[in-house]
Length: 329
Ligand code: SF4
Ligand SMILES: [Zn+2]
Ligand SMILES: [Zn+2]
Image (cartoon, rainbow, N blue to C red):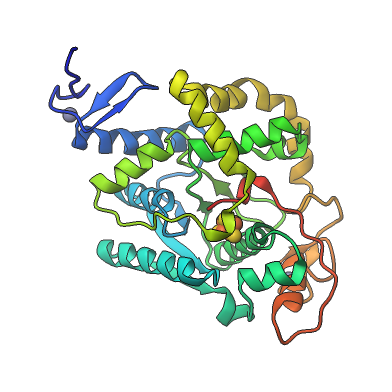
């Protein structure tokens, strides 16, 4: 059998990418990943070289790799980590993030749910009797938005990779959720007081991100969030991985085929979604009387959650709709 060589330098390889029919040595695989991100930012007009970028970091491989890549590409990029209070998982995630930031001399903003708002994600799940990802996803969105707007960031970026986006797309297509399909775009413009949001890792897979971290000496939390058990997206990822084994490139074709050929079919829904608030309501937005963030009700959903989940407060009614694109590990 012919021995594979690096596509660029013909040296010994560290990874083969069957979906692209290429193999790379360490140096050229790292460049490949960085080039894929640079290409994605350019192709989707995500942000310019002068942008002030905020990356949402979880301590996992994707967000730390994204932070590293953007820093290597020369962007002005700070990190934001949220202490979710999910036991050992949260404390380790935060520690991995701190260690990474310190090793690169990067600015990390730490935001702790318990000390800032008096509740944790498990408290919120208990108070709302909903799956933890519902209140967790909503809390993270609220905090990303607030920190980005208050800190004058031009854009919030998240480490959703190709596997994440293909799995979310699979779930949205399986139920023909047109509102979610409309918003499943790697760029959401700033609107109605919400910051611009982009996903620069969409061309890179989970396996590529894990390899990138190893080669760049990035230590990350390997364990999945314990609250993710039963998450449908993990099942969809398994299904797509099976397809990928038989047909390399299947995930890429599925997701980019949607962006190239099908997403425009939902353009009207997308335009409509821009006129709505972050939770899909068409009610006009006004500042939340408690936190000042845009809301379709007098008190926003996050502040209602705080009232309900913080142990010292009186319960109030709260409606939370999980948005699949923000559910992650
Ligand atoms: S799986 Fe992700 S969204 Fe769900 S509780 Fe854990 S960190 Fe939050
Ligand atoms: Zn090489
Ligand atoms: Zn509020």
